[in-house]
Image (cartoon, rainbow, N blue to C red):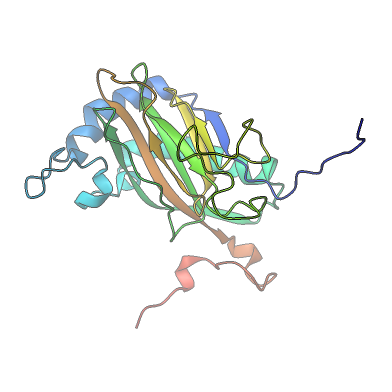
Length: 236
């Protein structure tokens, strides 16, 4: 028997929180937000499907006054993530810079792996999730443990080195889309969606968004790193 121990280092941590006001937020979404931020599902020029209102010029749900209570609760979760989970100091303000509808009506309407480059934290708040809705999948494109290319990739069941899916060698991690929950993660984390069944009925609806954190006004002279308050920003 070989004696050994392992040390798993440098994690990526995803936060899942419960939206306490979900029932009223869902009603708000269907009565007020959805009509304003509706977008064509089918792109007539290409025949392809559009899944997000972000690409249709409608990424500003957070500016709606009716959405204020919902955005305040989302902000509470974001602060809880970086204060309680990441252990940061309470020296930041949270700014919502984009928010949009993510909508899927077919298992084939998946979102390819991507990142949200301009922001610090991103989230997906699941407003409506029919049974077998597409799941959220996080990817590790440059796995530190992968000593040569494609060692941890399973292109085909018969053409893979993986004998057992383990934390140390997995390159993908899936999270089930559950209504009323919010998922928060670092914006630079590669992610997308994937189907879990051959069919589902209805609409998988989420409000997704990007946030940045800036130093509080009282902290702006204390740190050399990080953004200062936007009121000091200029464009010429």
